[in-house]
Length: 466
Image 1 (tube, rainbow, N blue to C red):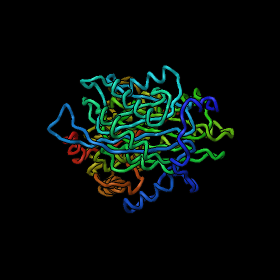
Image 2: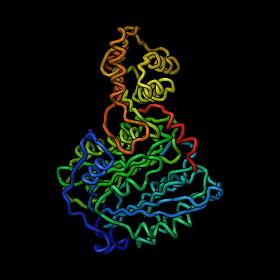
Image 3: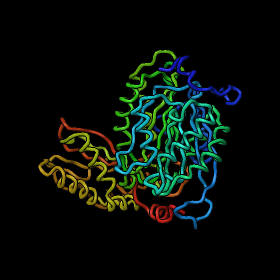
């Protein structure tokens, strides 16, 4: 826990250096409202982005020339610093990618976790993911951490947790970040809003993502995330940071975060490619001393992460529809049900059908049959039924399709969930609703989110590095 003794471990910034929030905090509901334009969306985001007590964020831009691709010339890079202003905290938890080629920041993060020490800052850079590069990636990450520690007056760089996202295989321009970018990011620290940080960590994201919830004791849980491509959990190309001023013991925080991540970020997929850099971090500044109801906190954490997970899919590269596959009464484990859901939303044929508002229900049944035949061949599917947009389309081993009227109803449902593959704000929160009921009353139930596949996705990923 954090108290006077732990806060003395680092030099605090003077209050005058950081603007203090004065506006009343507002929260995001489970379903965001509709928005007419990007200005309306950003105005709304401002109202729900108040930082919890004890946090400040700052960002800055710089340039570098890639060692691997110097012909591209000067490229932009950005660093964001999240500072725990009242001293180090032992109350932090993290979940990292399971990719067998993890980025250097993941290795550093795992080392920090193994050491069991406190944190007082996070540093996130975009453009270069610092994965399997030709140099010493861990040393580069530590150099950036040292620059953050120096700028904030911290006793050790081990108090800083790094994250990177961007091109895989390039060396991190650590010198440029440490000498040119991080010092300015530290100067830009402010404690009003997390929205600037949510915007700063984006890569090919189309809009910033913030979710927030205020607890009954006044503590806040505020989360941001980035992620647009290479989204296939465990977890997805995604970075997410959840900040709270509630007082939460470290062991309980890790347990709750791991459970919530499994139910949210690990239940989504955009393109089936698991990233090398996935990171979810939850940090408690412990500035609200009133007792917190752990059940209420976990519910808030779940709501924030669930909202961010949906935002990530809706913000996917080239995404124009979000699918929500609700699997119920499944005759297997949650892990198996989750993999089935991903198999459905990752089917290229079905994704393309959704993109074109084409209710090609055979592709849906084919994806389910493919998974069950490969991985659960002895399962009884005789009671399985399928729905699209709430209408039954398959039951007792046969399709239930009744002419042009039903075809139009199904297509209209898909069209109602469309929002364009290049919009820079989320106009609505609707889904292409797909139900898969196996009829096993004692079975497993969960939902998986996924996106369609558009021409815009191909265009973005054909020209990503430049």
